[in-house]
Each structure stands twice: as structure tokens, then as C-alpha cells.
Amino acid sequence: MAKSTPVRVGAAILVVLLALLVSYGLWTVFENTLTPAALDQGSWTNTKPSPRGELSPTAARALAAYGGQAVWKAATTVESTVTVGGLLFQLKGINIPPHAKITVGVQRPHTVIEPVDESGDIGVLDGFSVMIVTPGGRILEQRADAREHLQNSSLTTQWDRLNLLYFLGYAFWGYYTLP
Image (cartoon, rainbow, N blue to C red; front, side, top):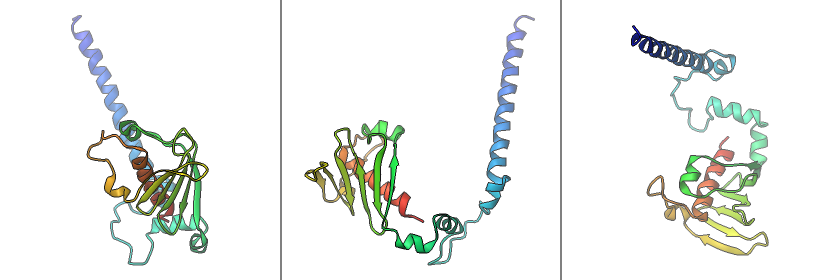
């Protein structure tokens, strides 16, 4: 009988874990489908593309939330302060300092990251070109076609400052300029 006690305890633990897992799954379904915020998002099964030249319902809501089409068309830059982190940057062996200022041009791929490193240098993405400049404007490094030189053969391939600048510059430009 003593041997069956550990088996019963183990079974009880498994039942509790299974109950927690099922509860979490049900809660996730509820949060993503039945709450007022989820219901306001429209059908998650709607995969029909928007007509050419028209925004999707989600993009239209985002545009309205930021002041509407007139405000967006008049915008020239979007600016923010960010702290970037995560496993990708640990694997690539490089990151930008916390609280970096990101400025993106709305009409074309142009991103400024200040600072891009601990020494205070500034990173500039302009089209497919990237450069690192000092706060005084002196060019320290540059790469004319950064996309062609992105060192990304595997997840653990290390990046240099210009690879990081290209990746983040295009990422933030896309994040901030897609209505």
C-alpha cells in the first residue's frame, strides 16, 4: 500500500496540471473571441483581402485612432523612445542602448537611431544604405547596400553594427509607417 501513495500523489498532480491547462485554454479562447474588445475586432476567420486601394478594417481603425487620413498624409516623421531586447539580440551578439530615440520618415525608408551604441554614435538608414555617424556628423562606417550584406546565414550568425542598424531601421520604419 505504501507504494501506491506516491502513484496517487503523482496522479493527483497530473490531474491538477491538466485542469490548469484546460482552464488556461478556455480562458484564452474567451479572451480572444468573447470579450467586448475581441468582438469589436470582427471575425478572425475573415481572410478576404481588402479591395485594391482600400484599407482593411483593422488598418482603417488604426488610422482613425491616430487622427484620420488627413493627419497621416500631413505627417513627415514619427518619433519614439524605445528599449529593445530579447533572444534575437542575444543570439546576434549586439543591441542598442536602452531608451534610444527612433525617428522615421513617413514617406520613404529613412530611420535615425540615437544612440545606436554605448559610445553615443548615431545610426542612419537611408533606403538600402546605412551609416554610423558621430554626434558631430562624421561618418565612421557605412554600407551602400546593407540588404545584400546582412549576415544572416543562421540564427546564431553574429551581426555587426551595420547589420543591426539595417534590421532595426527597416523594422521600425515598417512598424511606424504602416497605417
